[in-house]
Length: 265
Image (cartoon, rainbow, N blue to C red):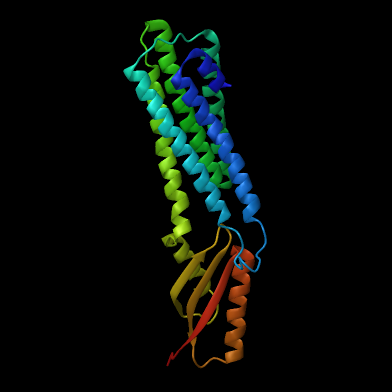
């Protein structure tokens, strides 16, 4: 692929761009392994399941991205300080043009699907493909300048791609570490949950909402629910049971409700 062609031609920018694409593939494989491990059922040692393996897999990808990005940045700086002219032949130019076209098509394809079904993963993949197209486009520009103007921008282009990779890696680290250490739920999720619970008959309000995230689709929530104190305890209990059951069925939320009686008169 591009890595081999870049090594043969001695182009750090082409090698960097190729490794950027390879990391996407490696990230997909690691993510799939994470999905597989996260899908394992709960056991005695892990009563809440293994959902956080998905976050750990994401962190592994992020570390891989950062390490490669830093190494490529070092190589790019070395190439800038010790420049050597790289002759970009027709084969390299064709490969780069083809890569840009494919990445642009992928970005448009995923974006079209995202508009139809409103999927966060598809939105992320579309943005990733668009960014890859921009990075490859920068390498293509440096190759064209080198071939037709005789200026060597290979080191600068390689450094630019490396910085792009490091920037993405830092974002990935933030996104994966945050749920592992325990991030606060989004305001949208809290509002959604509050509206959902208070929509049930007899629920006057909720407070002391606590959310534990054990991985995607594995959220454990406890809440104090306010209900009229003069209602029949059996009816109140049935409503609470129904809320807990239906939120598990519709939203995969394991809800535990503490009943708080409220004097309404």
